[in-house]
Image (tube, rainbow, N blue to C red):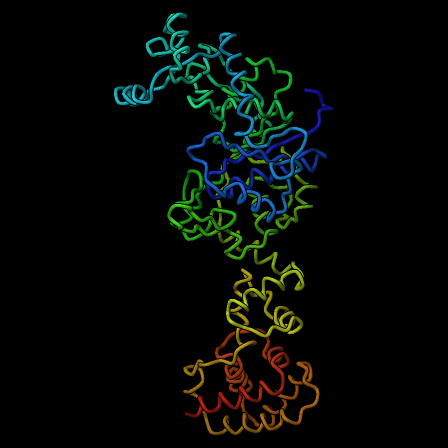
Length: 507
């Protein structure tokens, strides 16, 4: 292949349901390779299997990619010079290639009905339609040309299957795995064109990759067994010199064992495997996604980028721009990468800390609205966010860590206070509350020495009064620096909370 060939890669999902994080990683690696080499990133929707098509799934895929910042250069929504970008709209182009393969002896008509094939499977549990039995089945290889023409002329439903050669080795160089070889005797005669005239994945992917001038194919390792069929088709259609380079990405594995991570594993272990919420149209059941759980897109993309790839250093946090700059196929692992949800949460925590308060503010305000906070002051919310930001794993954690900044505590951790409460402490807080009335500079830097000086004057211990003071303000033994809280709540609110808490503490 010419080194001057323009890089063109494609992400080609089927619109059949939620977008698995493995699918998003495939899209990401395609995107990174295209951007690194000034190439094109194409979204092609593979909707040839009409029985599995789900309404709304294509829009969902578009939204997932947009959320992740993976904008295609060409797509069904955007168009381009190589359209259409939905396989169902390319249907007329496939039959001619299937017929060409038959004409050249590389494929054949198969007239077996679904019931007949099911019967074969009952008789042979490991039934494969292949060189071993193709002459015993009902197809244009076992029938005479006259019988075949008669069936075709009568409109008899049929498929077209590839005629896989015997006793050959199909080899290719995978960009990740190096030399890969397959024995054709172990490969079955895959259907290329279905009875409804729609192509299967095997034929469509080759025809479309050729038509769209795809230069490199990044896809999951689960497609490796299909590679010899695709390579044979590139050869049989006479397109060998235009065949793309192949890269089969390592699987994303279950965190607690071997095998590919599935939605069932996520349900079992309590984490999402879809990029965004997916609602099943038939059952109305919603499968939760990373976005709705509170992941930032930067964190989600970063986490996926280092699942099966690293840049050779200790660096773990990468923006999309940094991933693009540092990405190389040579650093993709051959081995599967175990998904670690705790690590995923760590990425989100780190990205929340890295993200500006201004950028987080809209989501924080959504959290407040969800908790019926009506009057939202942007400046105040930003100050509160600054105080609690380092404690957040998800944006939704904001309420847990900051609710007391917006609503007065209704209850207190009395078990932490009551056993050691005394009349002296009541007097101290009554006096400090009166003193607060006279304080002019309501800043943490001034309030802290003022409060601690009063404790020293009282001859009581610091810990005996600091903890109750915190509980008066927030309801429990948690929250950021207590004088930060005091400053943000404001003089009137602090005085009111101390007064209210004293009633509970002395009851």
